[in-house]
Length: 188
Image (cartoon, rainbow, N blue to C red):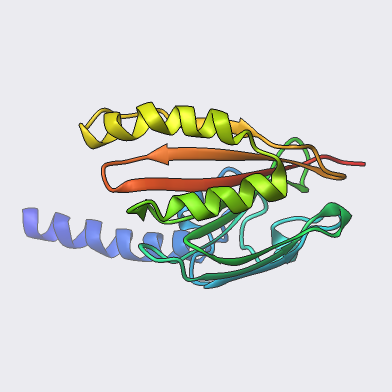
């Protein structure tokens, strides 16, 4: 009896699972299942656009990532013509109050042995982040993280640009520091 019941449940579950897998995800779907098979993020965000217009199966997010390495070949054109390019671990673009993309996150791997310093210097020069505030934060956050204390992270605003506002999020961990450049798109 139990064997027949188990076979019936399995017979019903397999087609149901296949049917669910075939349905395209929709708004509010788990972003972890978003497009992650792409190792490139060549996105033109110089004018309003949606994740689906960039190739996502989801209408609220598009993600390009390579786990554990900085393998996402990135070239993002922002409003005003600024371009973010390089190789990153994860690049994410999400919608906000409308169907258009409103935020972009460009995230590094955990950088070790001070490898975060030249990257922070370049970002400070380009976006106007407060280097003294960053240094003061890291002076206390790095020893705490090395001791195993969990730090919630810190955000540093940059100089607003035509069409977007940059901020830099620093997340120390036991091995080093993760840098997350967050770009909030501002409609004209």
